[in-house]
Image (cartoon, rainbow, N blue to C red; front, top):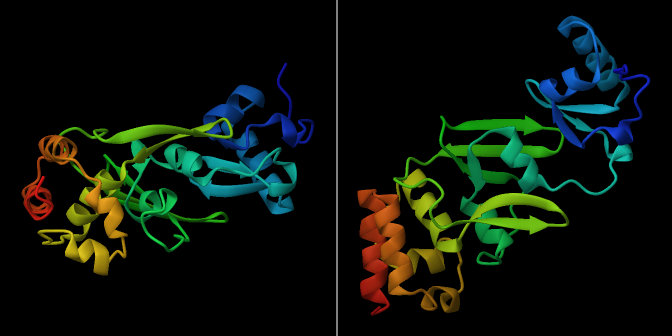
Length: 211
């Protein structure tokens, strides 16, 4: 038999959940469930992330939340990319105070109690090409490889870059990372991305690095 949110210990809830998951736990009408959720948010037991999506307050979390994993459930299909992916992989020196993701649907931004989540549409030919599934402390998420994150950045920001110079001076990427690129990797990324601006950049990198 289902329970009300008042009867349910918050440790029993997943740390990040949707209206659909609440409906499987709490019986009754949609209006009743919304009223229970509203009271829980007023008490500070739950955080409202976006329409129909909630997060258990920190005092009820069994472990720290993985914001990259949460981004996947906030808006999808998506994967972590751009500055967040480059920072996670230590390709840029700065920590990124929000989570940046590439997505299939229209671009969106969500301001939440946990911080900002931005989703930028990237219509590549193969959406998950050069994207890896990573696991951290039992949480999984999809993240762009460094070169895919750079390709996404160039496409999304309309950059007309033709080599590694702006990567070093604008993004502050260590040249040693760039020198480790392979021709096969960059050519495969070019084929799977399929956008002229990105192609011009990748081919420029191949020529500049003599790959």
